[in-house]
Length: 92
Image (tube, rainbow, N blue to C red):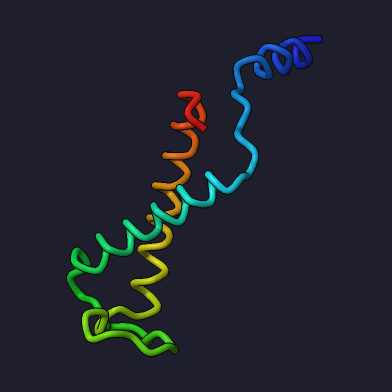
């Protein structure tokens, strides 16, 4: 009895999350691009790990797989925050 009452009370406090749509995708892509741009100039020991298997311009010379994984992980954290915040504000 107590468990079902707690579950019922918790269900009313959990906000609904937004469904995927192109606006959500654009926000996530933009956040990842911003994070990659920030990481390109903020990572101190870049180019230590394996290199990307594709050609890159000279500006991205020391940008390898570890840097890509780190910046896109950060971008997804930013994107999730932006998406949840904008959805909570009613903008999305």
